[in-house]
Image (cartoon, rainbow, N blue to C red; front, top):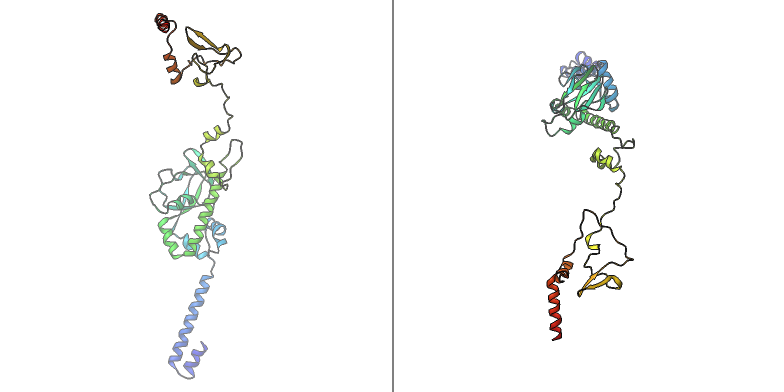
Length: 311
């Protein structure tokens, strides 16, 4: 500024005066911009709590957060008790919601899964899992348990904002991942064994344990059924034409035919009342080759055989 005055009044140099006066104007504009940047940016009490809890630890500026929650990208809505933020198999997963106040319950059918408290995302698992497609729908229902207020962003709006603010995109991705982990640990409290203990989702075998149905888990702890006496297989039973006993009084001959009987000291195996003894093919062939001693034709054949031997 002083150099501009010197150039105008002392040396009468219009070009030097113009350059110095231009630099003065640029410096003043820079000062105004810095003062504007330092001004305090205020939010609603609910958004202020979200900023201090989630975004301030990651060094996100208040101006970046203000742009993120501006009406150009975000929408603030309210829910009454009993109203649904999303319905199972009906609502598309094309947005990301953040609860500002109140309490929301996540339901699968009529089964309660876990609650959602303020400063938590409403649908972070669905938003993260449906990046590739836009036609996926919620697998759960999200119903307000009390009067709630929430802010949500459309997926297209967030993607456009993340292109302009890459650091903000990294912060939101980290917050979504942490929120999904929190919901998984909340679901971990629902996994209880038969003995009443909780399973830890960090264990390597948790996937195998979750894959087993509750019916199989209950049946695994049942004692084994009592053992029953099984009938002896037919191959191990002593039959009328058995060849195993060849000594002692177990051999008896009648009309030239050898018949085997069990010894007196041999232990008898009881037969099942509903099961008849059967013979193998070898034993049946031996039995068929033996003539029937009770037949009248057998006696005649035996006599003729003796006469032939005499001659």
